[in-house]
Image 1 (cartoon, rainbow, N blue to C red):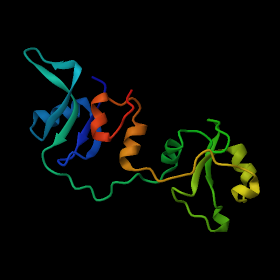
Image 2: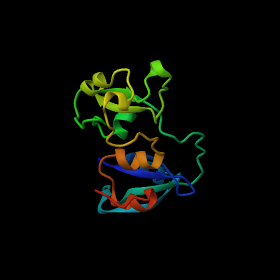
Image 3: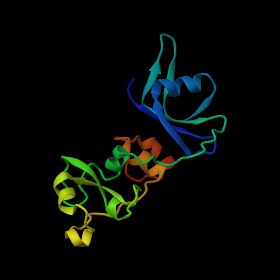
Image 4: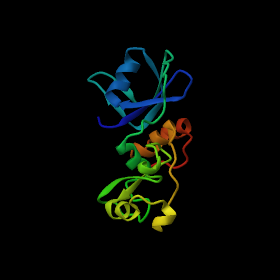
Length: 169
């Protein structure tokens, strides 16, 4: 029973993703309701068959004080799809400050990019123009929904309406 289930808040906003076992337990205990079931299979016991959850909605609203993506090294790598933002290679990766810290650059979503060690050494303490480097795409702060959609791997087609997604695996 491998797989993931999208969990929606009471207002249908995406809350998180959980395992099928946890989702089934929440529905079975009456703490959530089944919104979308997988059409491909069912959960079976000796005497019953239950729909396999794909999307559930919690019955009580969950207040989430901060719903942003935390700025971490791994999240920067995920945002940049594990590729150097200067040359595009996918090995020997590190982080690079666009405005170097020695020149007042901060560690923020808009100032950090994934770079290979070669490009990072080439850029050194210089600006992009001084180093003669060009970004493949500008850095940005990802939204929570975008981060969920892009970093879960294969997304169930049942999730698309709730994540405003058009491309599903």
